[in-house]
Image 1 (spheres, rainbow, N blue to C red):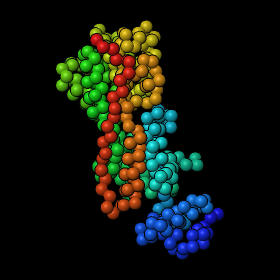
Image 2: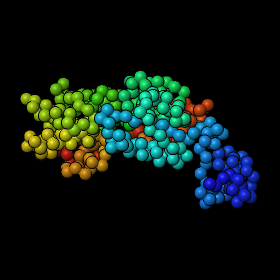
Image 3: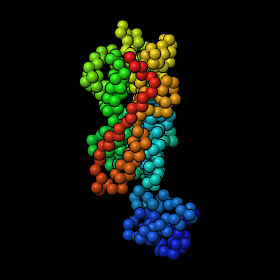
Image 4: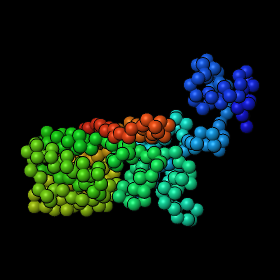
Length: 335
């Protein structure tokens, strides 16, 4: 194993100088920094995690708390993309990731206990029940936390602009001539509340009267519940001409139900989704949807969390709003 002593000998500088460079101290010349880092990379040096923890009181390990209700894990297209970009940015900053759970080796522990057990310097929280007492315990601890698509007081967060996204989507559908617009929404989370309020407000501002029967509950990423909601909407005495789905994946259930009823998109019924995952552009016709900027959501969350970890004395928690983009497919017919 390559040691600091080996690098020191190869560079012709002191052990302390090499240590300062590898630990990011500023009082070393740029020329020496470049030499030490290049030599360390060429020699295949990797720092000893245990020794680094003792010296800096940091493990350079970030916890990831990610548990959705359907247990889809990293098959969750939207959040897996966010976490992938978070991972890339965190690794560039020298951090490893550990998934946090309440089960370890057959035993049970809280999220906070698991974070302490793994010596997590900070935690990113995404796609969980934010009202869960175990989640609130972690958020209320002294461990730096950044949340995705949910805002806690005094904690950092990156949030997709769901209000503007829904406004853009409804406005596009309205401009296509639709007035009977239905919305199948997901579980009543902060994301859903923002989208639902924006949907109702935008329709009201545009002059489109939306009956209560046009707003139906379902579950995110659950084609079955979306299929049931689709059937209920199309069984109404005056059915909608366009249905907005909670997310692109859930639209698959709606599409199956439409096909079972002998209806085609967009000739018989128009549809739109939300998220902008690859699937939305692979189906035919391509789905009109809002693409959420997963790259910025993930990378900004990583930078924010690393800042909270490394600049704890001066860091001020903040919320960053990340805009989405309207993707116009062929699923909304001009009336």
